[in-house]
Amino acid sequence: MKIAFYDTKPYDKIWFEPEANKKGFDITFIEGKLNENTAVLAKDHEAVCIFVNDDASKTVISKLKEYGVKAILLRCAGFNNVDLKQANKDEIVVMRVPSYSPSSVAEYTMGLILAINRHIHRAYVRTRDFNFSINGLMGFDLNSKVAGVIGTGKIGQEMIRILKGFNMKIYAFDPFPIPIEEVEYVDLDTLLNKADIITLHCPLTKDTKHIIDKHTISKMKEGVLLVNTSRGALVDTQALLEGLSSKKLGGVGLDVYEEEDDFFFEDMSNTNISDDDLVRLTSYRNVIITSHQAFFTKEAMSAIAKDTLDNAEAFFMGGDLKNLIK
Ligand code: NAD
Picture 1 (tube, rainbow, N blue to C red):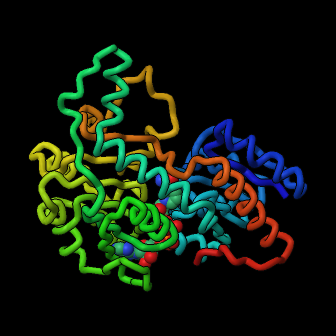
Picture 2 (picture 1 turned 120 degrees about the vertical axis):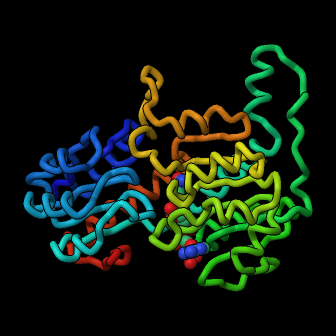
């Protein structure tokens, strides 16, 4: 079976090649992202394998159908970049890796919280320049403070486990609450109103797009820390910039960004960045932006490669399609 593998980076090959060899799959590694112009490269392949910033919108899916593609293998959990309606219509199966390592994302999120709160990124730069002053680097104790967790699925639950280790009080918001010890489910307004740190772990859907906007930010505590390691468009960038400029937000950690598709995962250090909002965000000293790397651990990559190709095997060899999305 031939798989066209889009948006390939060197680390993808390291993890996917041995798994593909084991199963006898033939992978064509393509550097470019999937979009209307690159869909043609999937010709003569039974499946495409795509990542978070590939474009599997209506027109792209129709083209894939025309080129004989029967399956879209997402090597990630989120599937907001796939037009499922069109895929169903064109009888293209879509599968994902729903859970590869929730700890990878939750542990990274905690890293961002600690770094923004205690200004570790600034201290690192200062001491490299032999500036040993600690002026302006004061944070606050997390012990006994309130953490607001939006979305208590696999990653949210792992996040809660970690936050409890810091003795934080946990408020959670999720339309589908589940019993979790020492966690109080509250409505979104209460969470926004009470939390000292807010962390987003819900998927991007039409209901959650801009769940953080100027109205929700206005309900937050002065100086709150906001972290988004979920999907960029959960946060309205303009509202975020206003919240930073008015000092309502004490610090922001972003591993995802609304317009990340054009920049993340690429070395743009020799380019003038055309996105003024991104440039403005990076200029705030109390903002840390990283390039969608929360998932990036050995354990996660190994599980992603195995589960993605298990999905392919199940579809093409007639097994259990447990990771099918409809
Ligand atoms: P999950 O499906 O296990 O959990 C998502 C939770 O969000 C569910 O409990 C769901 O009920 C809840 N939810 C749905 N709508 C909501 C709303 N309006 N408000 C609050 N909660 C809502 O997913 P997961 O594995 O925990 O992953 C969560 C998200 O993390 C993914 O959708 C993906 O976008 C993101 N993610 C990011 C990275 C990264 O590297 N940065 C890696 C993996 C996943």
